[in-house]
Image (tube, rainbow, N blue to C red; front, top):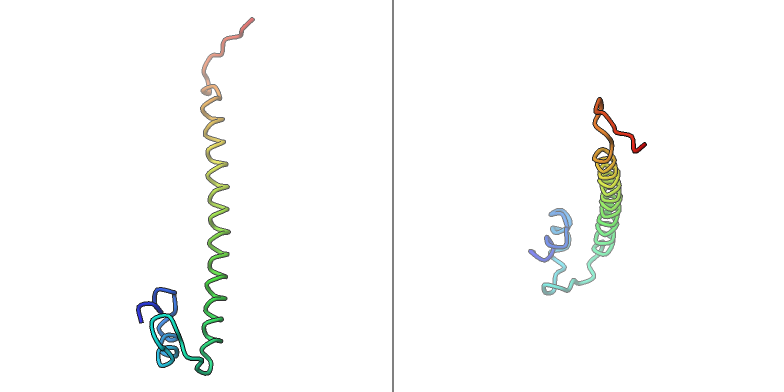
Length: 86
């Protein structure tokens, strides 16, 4: 049962799959089990893609923020006198 939870199966799928377990890593080909497992894999793939998108957007946000921070460090303070090299 722990192995089924560890792979991310919800308890409703585990209830369906549990009678088909042979040992910790093998299932008997019970009706509907492969369909349920494939459906769950599709859900996990979709969540992984969503997480990857969120991760990419967060990296972009960090990069833009860092670039803005660097420009702010280089910009003169508002109202400060600047000296001309001439």
